[in-house]
Amino acid sequence: MRIDILTILPGLLEGPFSNSILKRAQEKGHLEIHIHNIRDYSTSKHKNVDDYQYGGGAGMVMSAEPIAALIDRLKEERDYDEIIYMTPDGELLEQDRCNRLSLNENLMILCGHYKGVDERIREHYITLEISIGSYVLSGGELGAAVLVDSIGRLIPGVLNDETSALTDSFQDHLLSPPVYTRPPEYRGWKVPEVLLSGDFKKIEAWREEKAYQRTKERRPDLLKKRDGK
Image 1 (cartoon, one colour):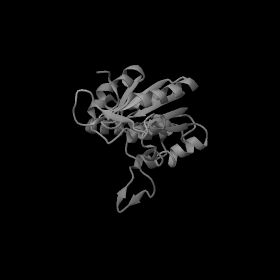
Image 2 (cartoon, rainbow, N blue to C red):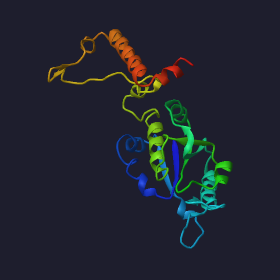
Image 3 (cartoon, rainbow, N blue to C red):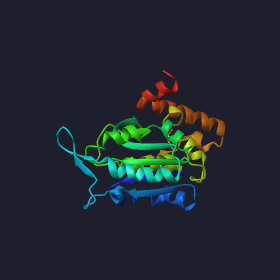
Image 4 (cartoon, rainbow, N blue to C red):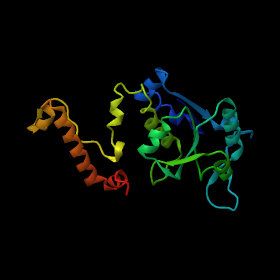
């Protein structure tokens, strides 16, 4: 998979993609991440990428021209399955969407700033708008990093144990069950006996029960989706 990210602050994205799982994914050739500076496509003397909004009001707006020029150049080189805009008023990111996006070959992500981008970019280029939560960040870069991480770890070959992603929270609309590791007893706190039994059918049943119980207590809304209500 290839992901192109359009931003005015490329430095914000260097850390998340140069460590841990996403770093290994790129080294193994499973994932390509290309970061593009929108300012490089500005035709103004000072490489401005924003301007005052029509109709007045506080806050600047990202200009259409440099964004359109960059998107046009990238689209000349390949077809994109989705051109995504990170915005607070977009679709709330959930695991089902991550699963579907992980099946694509080429994605483009636009990171907004200021009061947002000129609406004409959204109307004529954007195919999917995503929000990572009901709050506002200084820009779309952190949201883009979250999105790429949530997608990248699902690509076959990225995780050492590919079944790990299938048992994550939100798969099948359930939270993950409790997990334990060695030692079997610490400060008098013991690991449940069933997990030490070696009986994998009982262990699986215990995990399913605990996952359901935890979801019912903490995120009952997920169970409604699971049951199709």
